Amino acid sequence: MTVLSLQGINKRYGGIHALSDVSIEVQAGQICGLIGPNGAGKTTLFDIVSGLQAPTAGVVELDGREVTKAPPEVRARQGIRRTFQRVQLYGQMTVEDNIVVATEWRSGGGGLLADLVGAPSRRRREVERRRAAAEVMQMCGLTELRMALAGSLPIGQARLVEMARAIVDQPRVLLLDEPTSGLNQHESARLGQQVTALREVGVAVVLVEHDVGFVMDHAERVVVLDLGRVLADGSPADVQADDAVREAYLG
Image 1 (tube, rainbow, N blue to C red):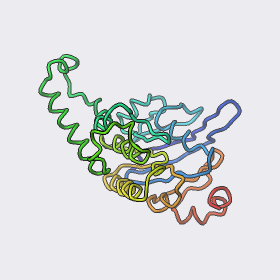
Image 2 (cartoon, rainbow, N blue to C red):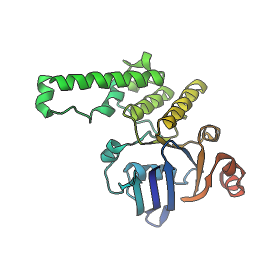
Image 3 (cartoon, one colour):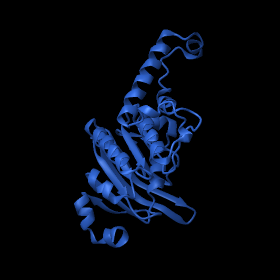
Image 4 (tube, one colour):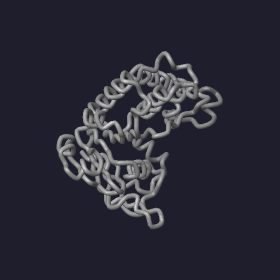
């Protein structure tokens, strides 16, 4: 089943073509690596998929429904989640609260009045949120840091918090932008385990990563961008053997 479909995506900034006719389909439970040299258009493509930028031309579909013009918050609620090359956390909130906030949109009903009176439905929902956060913190090795302020964490742990926030409310598509940057070997291995676990429950993962070894170890499919165009699309072995890819990026 195709979960994410990009059809003829173009992005121009004046006379600069950041993306040119990019078409990619990602299946449920597939880990797709997206690699290429700096300036190839990888983060721009992520911004278009997540709704932070609009394409100059082209169509974005999620589960067969067009979302090209949908705002970021709508896409997030429909199941497109992402992390960022520069970590985006609420620095003055605890690790636990940074994760719980991703589920706040599932209010439990009752509106403002239910909030003010502490309605039973709201209290039950809060217990469920905290339980889900505890589970994902355990998965990501963050339990002992649950009450730490996110802004006090080193970059590697902060990235794991961002990852936990992205998956606490199970996504349909997860966009990971340089997730191993700043992680030590143990943290990278844990991240790899989580990516594999997401595949097993049907989440489509698109992975932008300069650590080519990590991509080749975990992705079953690799797309190579160069100067805003798809240079290659295939298995890790096929991509590594591609002369054009080796010349433009891997060589």
